[in-house]
View 1 (cartoon, helix red, strand yellow):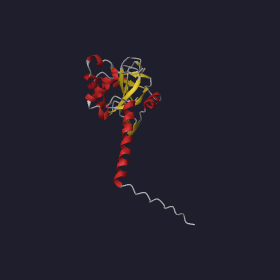
View 2 (cartoon, rainbow, N blue to C red):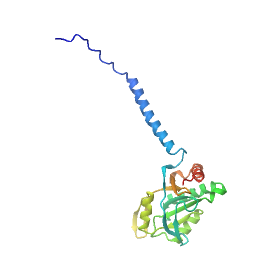
View 3 (tube, rainbow, N blue to C red):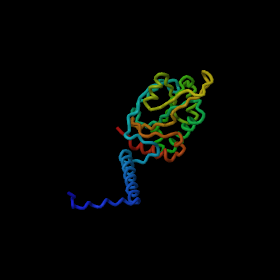
View 4 (cartoon, one colour):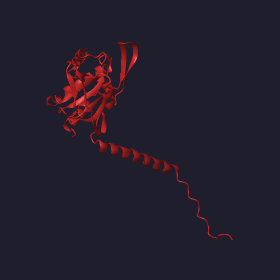
Length: 220
Protein backbone atom coordinates (compact mmCIF):
# COMPACT_ATOMS: atom_id res chain seq x y z
CA UNK A 1 0.00 0.00 0.00
CA UNK A 2 1.41 3.40 -0.94
CA UNK A 3 1.80 6.03 1.80
CA UNK A 4 -0.32 9.00 0.67
CA UNK A 5 1.69 11.47 2.78
CA UNK A 6 3.73 13.67 0.39
CA UNK A 7 7.46 13.92 1.05
CA UNK A 8 8.82 17.34 2.03
CA UNK A 9 10.75 19.14 -0.68
CA UNK A 10 14.55 18.75 -0.49
CA UNK A 11 16.34 21.63 1.28
CA UNK A 12 17.53 24.37 -0.97
CA UNK A 13 21.31 24.57 -1.24
CA UNK A 14 22.93 27.36 0.81
CA UNK A 15 24.11 30.21 -1.41
CA UNK A 16 27.88 30.16 -1.86
CA UNK A 17 28.25 33.71 -0.55
CA UNK A 18 26.48 32.78 2.69
CA UNK A 19 28.84 29.83 3.21
CA UNK A 20 31.80 32.09 2.55
CA UNK A 21 30.47 34.68 5.00
CA UNK A 22 29.96 32.07 7.72
CA UNK A 23 33.46 30.67 7.14
CA UNK A 24 34.92 34.17 7.38
CA UNK A 25 33.03 34.80 10.61
CA UNK A 26 34.31 31.52 12.05
CA UNK A 27 37.92 32.44 11.21
CA UNK A 28 37.41 35.91 12.73
CA UNK A 29 36.05 34.39 15.92
CA UNK A 30 39.03 32.02 16.19
CA UNK A 31 41.55 34.79 15.58
CA UNK A 32 39.72 37.16 17.89
CA UNK A 33 39.67 34.53 20.61
CA UNK A 34 43.40 33.94 20.21
CA UNK A 35 44.07 37.68 20.41
CA UNK A 36 41.92 38.05 23.52
CA UNK A 37 43.65 35.07 25.14
CA UNK A 38 47.08 36.54 24.41
CA UNK A 39 46.03 39.93 25.76
CA UNK A 40 44.63 38.38 28.93
CA UNK A 41 47.84 36.43 29.42
CA UNK A 42 50.06 39.44 28.70
CA UNK A 43 48.00 42.65 28.69
CA UNK A 44 51.05 44.84 28.08
CA UNK A 45 51.87 45.00 24.34
CA UNK A 46 55.51 43.92 24.54
CA UNK A 47 57.79 44.55 21.59
CA UNK A 48 59.70 41.38 22.40
CA UNK A 49 58.19 37.94 22.90
CA UNK A 50 56.52 37.74 26.30
CA UNK A 51 56.68 34.72 28.56
CA UNK A 52 53.05 33.80 29.22
CA UNK A 53 53.06 32.99 32.01
CA UNK A 54 56.42 34.29 33.26
CA UNK A 55 58.68 31.54 34.60
CA UNK A 56 61.47 31.52 37.16
CA UNK A 57 64.93 32.09 35.68
CA UNK A 58 67.65 29.56 36.45
CA UNK A 59 70.52 30.40 38.79
CA UNK A 60 74.12 29.51 37.90
CA UNK A 61 77.74 30.18 38.80
CA UNK A 62 80.87 31.07 36.88
CA UNK A 63 83.86 33.42 36.81
CA UNK A 64 83.48 37.07 35.82
CA UNK A 65 85.77 39.19 33.64
CA UNK A 66 87.84 40.14 36.69
CA UNK A 67 88.59 36.51 37.48
CA UNK A 68 86.28 36.54 40.50
CA UNK A 69 83.65 33.92 41.38
CA UNK A 70 80.29 35.10 40.11
CA UNK A 71 76.85 33.83 41.03
CA UNK A 72 73.59 34.68 39.34
CA UNK A 73 70.69 34.43 41.77
CA UNK A 74 67.58 35.64 39.94
CA UNK A 75 65.64 38.00 42.16
CA UNK A 76 68.52 38.32 44.60
CA UNK A 77 69.92 41.65 43.42
CA UNK A 78 66.79 43.79 43.26
CA UNK A 79 67.68 44.62 39.65
CA UNK A 80 66.55 43.42 36.24
CA UNK A 81 68.99 41.48 34.05
CA UNK A 82 69.34 41.39 30.27
CA UNK A 83 71.09 38.05 29.74
CA UNK A 84 72.45 36.67 26.51
CA UNK A 85 74.84 33.96 25.35
CA UNK A 86 77.67 34.74 22.95
CA UNK A 87 81.47 34.81 22.55
CA UNK A 88 84.24 37.31 21.98
CA UNK A 89 85.15 36.13 18.47
CA UNK A 90 81.55 36.51 17.32
CA UNK A 91 81.72 38.56 14.10
CA UNK A 92 78.42 40.46 14.21
CA UNK A 93 75.58 39.30 16.45
CA UNK A 94 77.32 39.68 19.82
CA UNK A 95 78.84 43.12 19.17
CA UNK A 96 75.47 44.38 17.95
CA UNK A 97 73.71 42.90 20.98
CA UNK A 98 76.10 44.48 23.48
CA UNK A 99 76.09 47.83 21.71
CA UNK A 100 72.32 48.16 21.51
CA UNK A 101 71.65 46.84 24.99
CA UNK A 102 73.98 49.53 26.29
CA UNK A 103 72.18 52.15 24.19
CA UNK A 104 68.86 51.03 25.65
CA UNK A 105 70.25 51.11 29.17
CA UNK A 106 71.66 54.60 28.66
CA UNK A 107 68.31 55.76 27.29
CA UNK A 108 66.63 54.98 30.61
CA UNK A 109 66.25 57.71 33.24
CA UNK A 110 69.30 57.88 35.51
CA UNK A 111 67.41 56.37 38.44
CA UNK A 112 66.48 53.30 36.35
CA UNK A 113 69.79 52.85 34.57
CA UNK A 114 71.51 51.28 37.57
CA UNK A 115 68.61 48.87 38.02
CA UNK A 116 69.49 46.97 34.83
CA UNK A 117 72.43 44.57 34.51
CA UNK A 118 73.65 43.33 31.12
CA UNK A 119 75.29 39.91 31.28
CA UNK A 120 77.09 38.00 28.54
CA UNK A 121 77.60 34.29 29.20
CA UNK A 122 80.33 32.92 26.95
CA UNK A 123 79.52 29.86 24.86
CA UNK A 124 83.24 29.59 24.09
CA UNK A 125 84.86 28.96 27.50
CA UNK A 126 87.86 27.32 25.85
CA UNK A 127 89.01 30.61 24.32
CA UNK A 128 87.20 33.24 26.37
CA UNK A 129 89.46 33.82 29.36
CA UNK A 130 88.46 36.42 31.97
CA UNK A 131 90.98 38.84 30.46
CA UNK A 132 89.54 38.46 26.97
CA UNK A 133 86.01 38.88 28.28
CA UNK A 134 87.01 41.99 30.24
CA UNK A 135 88.46 43.75 27.20
CA UNK A 136 85.44 42.77 25.13
CA UNK A 137 82.52 43.72 27.36
CA UNK A 138 84.11 46.90 28.70
CA UNK A 139 84.62 48.15 25.14
CA UNK A 140 80.83 48.32 24.77
CA UNK A 141 79.88 49.69 28.17
CA UNK A 142 79.15 48.26 31.60
CA UNK A 143 78.19 44.66 30.82
CA UNK A 144 79.44 41.70 32.85
CA UNK A 145 81.17 38.87 31.03
CA UNK A 146 80.88 35.42 32.58
CA UNK A 147 82.78 32.24 31.84
CA UNK A 148 81.06 28.96 32.79
CA UNK A 149 83.15 25.84 32.07
CA UNK A 150 81.74 22.70 30.53
CA UNK A 151 79.72 20.65 31.38
CA UNK A 152 78.05 23.27 33.59
CA UNK A 153 77.68 25.58 30.58
CA UNK A 154 75.58 22.99 28.76
CA UNK A 155 73.27 22.76 31.77
CA UNK A 156 72.87 26.53 31.99
CA UNK A 157 72.18 26.79 28.26
CA UNK A 158 69.61 24.01 28.48
CA UNK A 159 67.84 25.79 31.35
CA UNK A 160 67.38 28.88 29.14
CA UNK A 161 66.60 27.01 25.93
CA UNK A 162 69.88 28.08 24.32
CA UNK A 163 71.63 26.07 21.63
CA UNK A 164 75.27 26.37 20.57
CA UNK A 165 77.81 24.35 18.60
CA UNK A 166 81.13 24.78 16.86
CA UNK A 167 81.05 25.50 13.13
CA UNK A 168 83.54 26.12 10.32
CA UNK A 169 86.21 24.31 12.34
CA UNK A 170 89.68 24.75 10.83
CA UNK A 171 91.73 23.91 13.90
CA UNK A 172 91.64 23.60 17.69
CA UNK A 173 91.53 27.38 18.08
CA UNK A 174 90.10 28.36 14.70
CA UNK A 175 86.32 27.99 14.57
CA UNK A 176 83.06 29.87 14.87
CA UNK A 177 80.10 29.06 17.08
CA UNK A 178 76.50 28.99 15.99
CA UNK A 179 74.30 29.99 18.91
CA UNK A 180 70.87 31.22 19.92
CA UNK A 181 70.64 34.96 19.34
CA UNK A 182 68.03 35.89 21.95
CA UNK A 183 68.43 38.23 24.90
CA UNK A 184 66.45 37.21 27.98
CA UNK A 185 64.99 39.94 30.18
CA UNK A 186 64.67 38.81 33.80
CA UNK A 187 62.85 41.05 36.25
CA UNK A 188 63.86 42.01 39.78
CA UNK A 189 61.73 39.18 41.12
CA UNK A 190 63.73 36.59 39.17
CA UNK A 191 61.10 35.91 36.50
CA UNK A 192 61.75 35.56 32.78
CA UNK A 193 59.48 38.18 31.24
CA UNK A 194 60.54 38.91 27.66
CA UNK A 195 63.03 37.81 25.05
CA UNK A 196 64.28 39.85 22.12
CA UNK A 197 66.01 38.56 19.02
CA UNK A 198 69.14 40.53 18.19
CA UNK A 199 67.44 41.96 15.09
CA UNK A 200 64.91 43.71 17.37
CA UNK A 201 67.47 45.47 19.53
CA UNK A 202 68.15 48.19 16.97
CA UNK A 203 64.72 49.67 17.78
CA UNK A 204 65.99 51.16 21.04
CA UNK A 205 62.82 53.10 21.83
CA UNK A 206 60.67 49.96 21.85
CA UNK A 207 63.24 47.99 23.81
CA UNK A 208 63.30 50.77 26.41
CA UNK A 209 59.52 50.62 26.60
CA UNK A 210 59.69 46.90 27.45
CA UNK A 211 62.46 47.55 29.95
CA UNK A 212 60.54 50.32 31.68
CA UNK A 213 57.44 48.21 32.05
CA UNK A 214 59.37 45.28 33.51
CA UNK A 215 61.25 47.57 35.90
CA UNK A 216 58.00 49.07 37.11
CA UNK A 217 56.16 45.75 37.36
CA UNK A 218 58.38 43.02 38.86
CA UNK A 219 56.66 39.79 39.80
CA UNK A 220 57.12 38.02 43.16
